[in-house]
Each structure stands twice: as C-alpha cells, then as structure tokens.
Image (cartoon, rainbow, N blue to C red; front, top):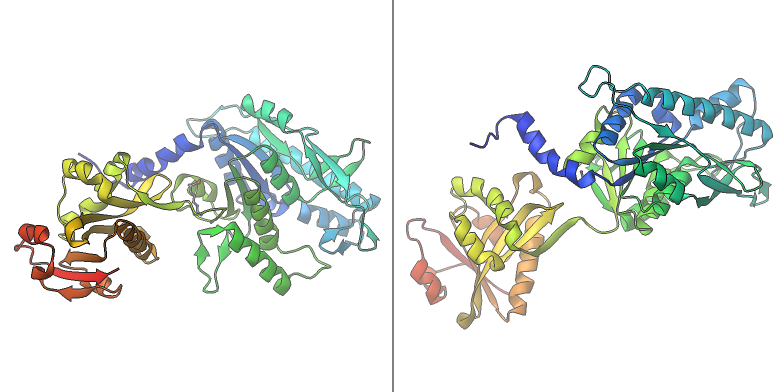
Amino acid sequence: MINDNNPYVNWFRHSSPYINAHRGKTFVLMLGGEALADTNFGNIIHDITLLNSLGVKLVLVHGSRPQIEAKLEQQQISDKVHHHLRVTDSDTLQCVIEAAASLRTEIEAKLSMGLANSPMHGAQIRVCSGNFVTARPVGIYKGIDLCHTGEVRRVDSEAIRQQLSINNIVLLSHLGYSPTGEIFNLAVEDVATQVAISLNADKLIMFGEDGGVRDSNNELRSEILADTAERLVSQYMAKHDEPDQTPSELSRHLKAAVEASRNAVPRSHLISYREDGALVSELFSRNGIGTMVIEQSYEQIRPATIEDVGGILELIQPMEQAGVLVRRSRELLEAEISCFTVISLDGAIVGCAALYPFKEERAAELACVAIAPEYRGGDRGENLLQAIEESARRQQLNRLFVLTTRTAHWFIERGFIETEVSNLPNGKQALYNFQRNSKAFSKSI
Ligand code: ARG
C-alpha cells in the first residue's frame, strides 16, 4: 500500500529523483564574506559535505568583502570605491590577502570536521585550492588607477576538472594571479561566474542575504528568465546603487546569474545563507526555496508520450476520486495517450488535458483538464487551453466542447457557452453519461 501520509516517506520520494539527477553534476557555490560570517555557515558546510557524499562535483568560491572592510577600518586605511569597483592600492591589497587567507584556512578547517553525530561521521572530505584563476588588472577606469583590482582572464578548467574527478572539493578565493606573479583582487561574482562558465557547470548557486528576488508585493519569485533578470538589474541599479559604493548584493548576484545563463550554465540559483537547509531545499525539491534564473522556462507544454502515463494517472486520480473527472484506467490512458497534452516540470507531470477529435463535425471534445493543486493559481490552465486550441486548429477543427459537472465557471470565463447535449457530435451523444448529468459547453475556435 502506498503510504502517502507519512511526511518523511513522502519527502524522500519527492527528493530522491533529484539525488539521481544531481549525481556527477558540477555545481559552483558562491559564498560571499557575509555568508561565511553568518551563524548558519556551519549548517551550510554540513550540507556541502552531504552534497559531496552524494557525488556532486563542487567548486566553492568565497569572498571576503566585510572582512576586508573590517581590516581596513582597523588599520585606518580609507576604503575607496570608484564606479562600483574597489581601488586596491598596496596597503589595501595587504588587507585583502590577509582576509582571504584567513577565511580560506577557516573553510578548510570546517570542511575537515566531517559530519559529527551522524552516520556519515568520519567521511573524509578533501579540499584543494590552487592557482587556477589567472587575472589581469582592470587598469585605469574613468581616469582612476584601480591598482591591484583585477578581473578574471583565464580559468584553468582542466586542472579544476582533474580535482573534481577524484572527488575533491575545489576551494577558490577572489584572488587571482598574473603570469608575471602579481596578485589581483577580483570580485567574487566574477570568479564564480567565469569558473562556472569555463567548467560548463550545471549550476551556479549564490548565497545571499535575502534568498532570492521579490516582487513589488514582497512575494518571492521562484523562477525568472535571464531576460527578466537583466531588466531587473538595470532598473534596480538605477534606483538604488550609487557609483561610489559597491552595488547591492541583489544587483551583483542577478548580473552574475544573467551572465552565466547567457553562457550555457543552465540554472543559477539565489538562495539565503541565513536560512538553515536552504541549499538542500533548493536542490532536492521541485520548486526550490529561492529564485532560479534560467534562459528558458523549465516548465514545458508538450504532447504526452507513453512515459507520461504514470504521471498523468498520479495527477488525475485524486480528481477522479473527488468526482471532478471521469475515471480512466491505465489501459485506456495508454490507448489514448496521443490525445493528451501535458505540462511537465523537471520530468513531473503537473498539468494535463485531452483533445478527442470528431473529424466529421470538425469539432473536438476537451476533456480531463487537470492542474496539480500546488500549481494552480497561475496561468497554467490558460496556457494549456491555448496549446490545445492551437492543436485543434492545426487539425482543421473549428469547435471545442466540454462536458463538466463542477468546473463550468472556469470554461465560461474562457469563452465557452452552454449548449444542449443535442448539439454535440452524434458520436458523443451516444456516449453521453446521463448519470453524471454533466452540462455541455462549446466554443468556436
Ligand atoms: N531542485 C531543482 C533543481 O535543483 C529545481 C529547483 C527549482 N528552484 C526554484 N527556485 N524554482 O534544479
């Protein structure tokens, strides 16, 4: 018997497909200095260890902005930012090196701790750092020499890959070296993005204070397209960011996500460093917990295939039990699968609808329209209907009809008008189930 009521079992069933999906994949995790200083950092380390043990290839890129700022203040060195870039003179560079070095040591130490008090106790995590990032100076920008402030010139992706292939975690800082042996202070976002791009990473994951993008109602945007993110960055920067300050975290992270998306990193994620378990929730649930930036929506409307039968059954069974949909057996569904259109999201079926043509009458029945409860409230039903209408038009049909007992209003709002059963195609009238006493609606398309 399926035990759907046990939340643990339920959770495991839903997350285990992602365990499989993420194995062997390469994720670049970016942790700014703020994340390292947060009390939740210990939990993040724990989750990183877990990912490593699940066979995910991990590159950690860390920053040290607040730690540098603290050191500058301690030594009474003034902090100069010019057009969003810190000017790294030699005194500043010394602070930068000290901050980065001490953070690296701390991260290495924490990763060496293993997972105390768990069955994974004693699991050995190997971390490796090195001269993987070659940098060049930014030079003179708008009249000001930025000194040791640099940008990424090249990433030795081959060397990083070698380390990843033997299961090592690669730890990179925001420092880079030039072929002449100079040290450059880079933006952590630049390093993380360029490393993700050059490794063809599967994900760039950025830990921030807010844990994602919020709309004007302060609702979290779970998924945004790179185009939208790009627009948001320029709007946001124009409104909030002064040229003599480092841009806000959100601008920096969104910019990095856009750049990664444009260069074939399929998914960039903005999650919170303050929330315990954010990394695991983002990675092992379908909807995540933060904001995912992608080039194209990962939700797809497409014709169903025979592999979708299981997913469709799972989706429609609760609605059949509630009497909203007519019962369909697996066999019937298999036979009629070519009539179905589905909305799939990372392989799961979250919506479906069927179109049964009556060629002679140039009409078709729209049936079995279902959207999973947790995915209602958006435009999914609407989009599905549009896709079905298009497909009907392609088949030279000019009228859709639907029989429904409980959801008439939804169809009426979308242009369907009530009609007599006697107006339905003959073939359908013959099958009309008087017991259900459904109402008929039709729409010209
Ligand atoms: N867990 C999946 C992944 O790691 C999907 C995450 C979706 N996240 C979101 N914020 N919409 O790719």
